Amino acid sequence: MNTIQWTIRVGNLPPIIKKCPRCGCEHYENSGCFRVNANGNRLDVWLIFRCTACKSTWNMRVYERIDRAHLNQEEYAALLQNDERLVRQTAFDRTLLTNNHVAIDFSSTDICVEGDCIPSGEAADITLLSEYNLCLSACSILSEKLGISKSRIKKLEEAGLLCIDGGIKKRKVGFGFRFTLKAGWSPD
Image (cartoon, rainbow, N blue to C red; front, side, top):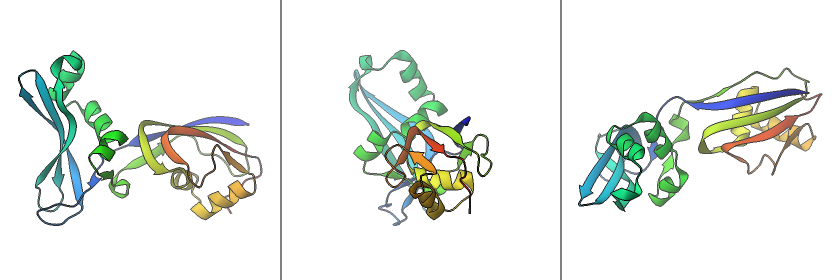
């Protein structure tokens, strides 16, 4: 049995779904910039988004009235420099997204699964890893990477040729998961 690792890469900053109060559009693009305001020793930090239609801005709350002493120097410097890694990490933070009542628009997010392909019929134990906690359907990711339909993925699971913890139906990608394809599976 082959042991394979796949890695999910996200090419662009994720846009969000939020209705614009100015024009009614429901898509905002990530500006890649933080806004940091100081009031004495307290900081407010937001990640700035722009409406894709009218370019009005909306600030997603990251920190509210946090004592500057609670932030380490590296994070504070990264916020001030609009560090791309921190912007990405913040943009995919499911807790922040939920607290701000928004969701990522995965249909406009450039997602690629890197790793070796599995020849039809060969058994493989696959580990899928993601740097971000992605609220994407595992079925969609497997369907895309294996080049087969979602209904075929479900049939493979029903036939016992695809094994995944918790079942494929409700499984989200999160930071990753493991699954097994057994010998004899086919895309047809």
